Image (cartoon, rainbow, N blue to C red):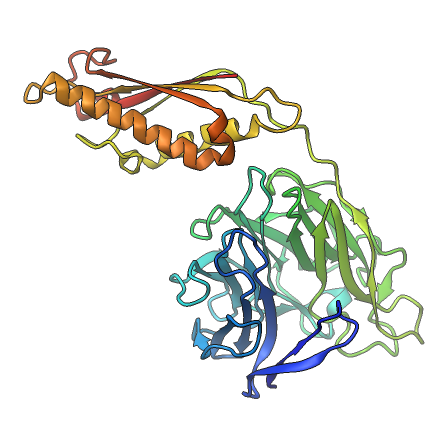
Length: 454
């Protein structure tokens, strides 16, 4: 089917035709997103993605409020079925989809408003290729579809990307229309996250439920709190695994842990009885979150055999965020700068990660109820080198301390201006390894010592 864009100027009361995005008749699962981030230089750009079954992902954009759209880009040529996209706080675009041939959840990222995209990254490998059969969806099947959202809050998780999908678990899927409550195969909901869309965490099951099925998840990140909200269908209230209710859970710690599942739907729906639509529940749900309130959207046939499928919504108040993690006085040393190198980019990944973690603690100290970090002392050091002068050693150690300061200031953000940074260059006068005999000992001498205090 073709893709057409309609526009409303009165908050959705009425709609008018705006533009035909694609005239092809093989388009599927089109999704739209608008960049509304004030800090983004691509603000108000419109992005549309969709899959062409068996031919891959497609993308187009409008930079003039929908008056025109760019030439359609092909983001993949794989067997994509289903997609979603999200926009980060600086206008980053993440397009996510399942490739049912390789059984991989994939992503591409753009940092230039959709003009170009980075190479494909794999988020996870799934057990099911596409559809698998469970008692509640034994005619239609549960599908491996994706939902993606980005943290646009000012909290410690700002810019983090989250992706959720359902997958088959625990056994071989039965044939269509041959499901039983006793079957080992079930459906579970998983989440993976990434700081920047490049490296992704291992897929983690959101809620452990024995002898029940969870499917059709959707998530969003509250831009005011950074809380990750997620809703999904669950059959845990029915021993036959046929009746479903929408459930809700949330994470206030960047998907490390999840709140106890909360029942949202007041009545169970059953799409397996006589008169039910052949598509059963379908493939999708929806959710939007703001101000610690989640608004899920779902379908159900909860009124009995003569009832038809209807669309429902509800207001769900999210969990209270944990108290802020207030920083305290501490010391840290980052070491193993490259020989004669001053930039923090020459540090090994574990040392840069430790520096980023320290910056996060400094930033968190400015949360309400905390005593903020006010002073950070930096001491730069160098390794002894008989071929170099004392002045060279002092200059190099000072530059290392200055680079560490610049790294911290950038990572802490606006509150870095409230912190007093002092720098001291010591050269090779205080080496932990006075007579280094190995490469590792030389590297340990090339360091910056950091001391911070409220």
